[in-house]
Length: 285
Image (cartoon, rainbow, N blue to C red; front, side, top):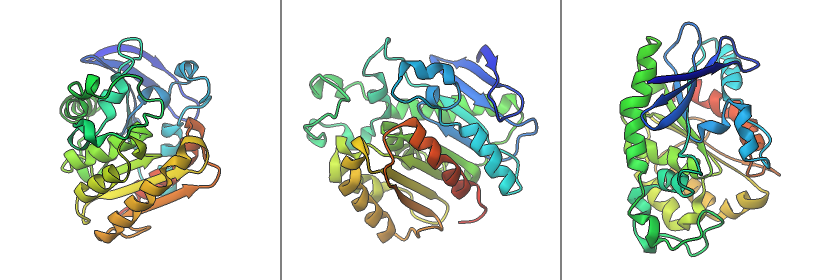
């Protein structure tokens, strides 16, 4: 682990640490005395460091995840979680890097799995990147290297029952996929605006069928109604029905939510964050 810098975020004590672990940039924040909760965020460059938002000027907000986590922990009378924000590969290194890292490889590894419409994700043939899908490697890096190194540094034990992963859009798919692939490590997936349109109803059906059986796990799925999020309605409704048919119960170990006029933006996802964190950090399922 290479330390890059420290910076402060209004609303949380201490400082956020920016580090390099392998080829990956990671921001993390932890309370002075870490508890048992750990949350990992995809698209980590959008989560805490507002200086990064210039690369996506239409977003104009961070997720404010640590600030929300502190407030929700206080509400539930528990110690705040450690917040670990994992950056995707920079676009100037590989403009398809994020797509390759966040695509659920097991379900999208063949040309026939992909919908014809890319919705702006790529402008090349599907075949040109299928061989390079590497979500599985990123999940391994997170579970076997990134989280262990950070928690070891701050003397925190990893408790799967209190470990969550969060993401939005392609990162929302990645959060669900990570919990499928490493159900022993992540017991909660918080997925905002999962980008079903890459595989449509077929993808939603496969992922909900493979999500861990109810008992130890929690799942949050939400979408807005504006712009790109409006395209998710059909597949998200199917995903909601399928996961409930497997025994997940709304407001117990499952939340499915539609935010009226919610957009595909950091500001909308930041709006969801407190309720999603509360759902995760509440004791029991």
